[in-house]
Image (cartoon, rainbow, N blue to C red; front, side, top):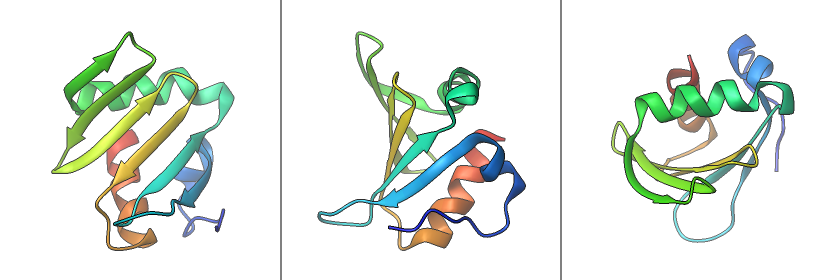
Amino acid sequence: MKKMFRESELLKEYISKVDEACGEGTEFIVTLKYSKREEVINRVLQKCVTKQNLSGILIKGKYKGKEVSIFKTGKLVIKKFRGRREAETFLEDLIK
């Protein structure tokens, strides 16, 4: 479980950490910085196509063919990646 990003100022500004999840496929658990949580969630929701909304607590969607789960608590789960570099590039595009 690594916390460091590849020198991305955008990720450093909005994201506290990115952890690789255990299980099938490569999934990442993204913890947003508390002070930026609402801003990032709003940006992500504008870009994602919503597939399922569970009372606003958990929203599942898709962006560029990737699955994104958005938790009101400030966590994202992103799925179907080949590695950390691909996931971080995706995150940069998702939150900019």
